[in-house]
Length: 154
Length: 154
DNA sequence: CATGAAATAAGTGCAAC
DNA sequence: GTTGCACTTATTTCATG
Image (tube, each protein chain N blue to C red):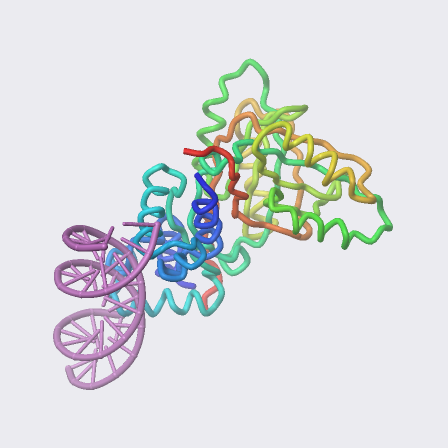
């Protein structure tokens, strides 16, 4: 993971459809060397895949909520986690430090869908004690572009 | 946005590198008709772009924190928002309902980097009154794949 | 929307340096 | 890692039905 790999990964996160010729310019390498780099980044698992990036509003889920959840201690939480993984509206589910047990990121079509999610999917889960819903009023920034660290040489 | 477009967008979010031939099978259309659909989805802004999906750990930012921030009311928050947009460690910044003003999603290399971020970048911002850091202990689920609503016909 | 052909562009592999 | 070339594959465009 040198400086060149960093430049390549950043460029590919910004636009993965550019092609090797243009990427080679960014990398400062030849096309074949660049292709080799990309291939190795995929093999090493740094690049997990290639995805189309959708506009959430155009995709029909303009409502964004984060939900803090407290699950009763002592219980087996496997069922809860499995349920969250299955729910496609749940984009993220993290076990967190502090007063709460989990933080969810959820995208939905509208408020009725949120109501249904909270009642039928979330509070219906056994062990769920407390729920706090943080509705996003405005999204200042939302990106999946990771700041690739120039750290570990290989 | 009919059922076919839904299938296409879901498939392209899962794997955007498959090619039109394979996508056509999923869509149940011919290759040319499928290509036309994809093109129109891009033109309509449903598909915003094509991105490489990186492994956060391999990319060198294994630490994930969500940060709740209260900004003093009455102040102009443009400066705060601009600062968050500039920080590449800040993946998301949402203005939210409830006791807090903003919710941030931040990815960092390690705890010293978190310390530096909280002190030098966040608390240094004028107007920031209260900060609560939620450290992710375990990520149960983290995806950017949107559940495309079969809603609005066009 | 399907089919098929032709033209274009891009990725892949290999060899020599 | 570079350059160049041939090989192969995919996308694009267009005509016809």
